[in-house]
Length: 184
Image (cartoon, rainbow, N blue to C red; front, side, top):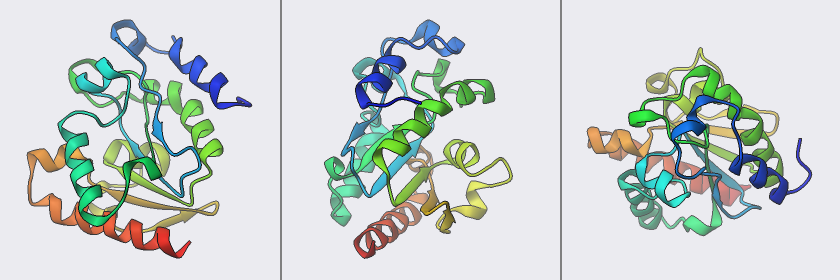
C-alpha cells in the first residue's frame, strides 16, 4: 500500500510487473478529481492514451466526453482509471496475469479517491472488479453494492463505436449514475 498519490504514481511510472511494460510509450495512471464521488474504470489504454499518458483521450474517450456533456457531468469532477496502466498489444483485452499485476495500483487509487459510485466500463472492468461470474450483457445497468460502494456496469465506450444501438443504454446508465451521485 502507498501512503500518498505521488508514491503511487511513481511506482506505476516505472512498473515492470508484467510484459505490458515492454512496448509502452507511457503508463496511463488516471485522471480527474482525486476526491470524486464517481469513478470510472475502463480496461486499458489504447494507442492515443499510450501516446499521451491519459485515459480515454481517443475516439472512445471523445464519445464518452460527448455523453458526459450531454447529461451534465463534468469530466474534471469524476476520476477515470483503467484496470491496466499500459497498453496491451493491438488493443487486445488485458490477460488475467496482466490485470492482476496492476490490481494493487487500482485498489490504491480507489482507496485514495473514496468514490461512492464506480462505473465499470465494459466486460474487462466488470469481471476484474466484481468477479468472473458477471456478464456485461446481463449486468449492464444493474446496481451492485459492495463494501459501501455502488457499482454500475455499462458498455465500454469503444463498444458504442462498433454498435451504435448501445449508445442509448450507455446514455441511460450515465444518467442513472448522475442521479444517484446527486442523492449521495
